Image (cartoon, rainbow, N blue to C red):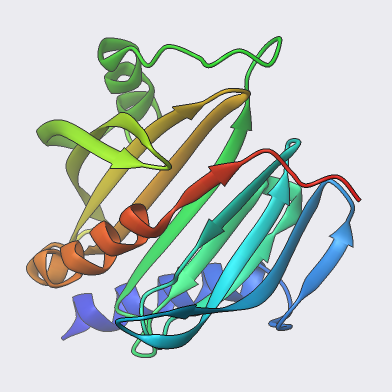
Length: 196
């Protein structure tokens, strides 16, 4: 019980730091999140989120009933379920010279273990988003002294940079969110921006 409350509180605090919750946001020209409607034959009319950043147009369908919050200073977007028991975020990292960076699994493992020094990588596998193949890792770590948290981090390169996705939840509930994470990656599209 303490672990669940701690994780909920941690995710809530992270969400509060991300700023206000407007439907369409555009504080910074190079990082702007807006919504559009789209009709999908199997689902009807849905709300699609479009992020304009790093000279590209990123669009995605968030999991049903999850809130979406931009974080322009960190070039990230945070998604939270109603019960705040998990969190998904993704951030855009610009590459050099507009080229598609090569994803090196060994270097990514090292970066993850630097970021989360006490973590243990439990799995490594291929993932797909934006029409590209990427690499994903599952990690486990302790948050506080009694709470075990798990994360799935997925890295996908595009011409101009990399998108890093991260799902985090209490280890005991982690598998409950795999489908939501997978659907987000499946819906993710990367396009050059349309000229006005």
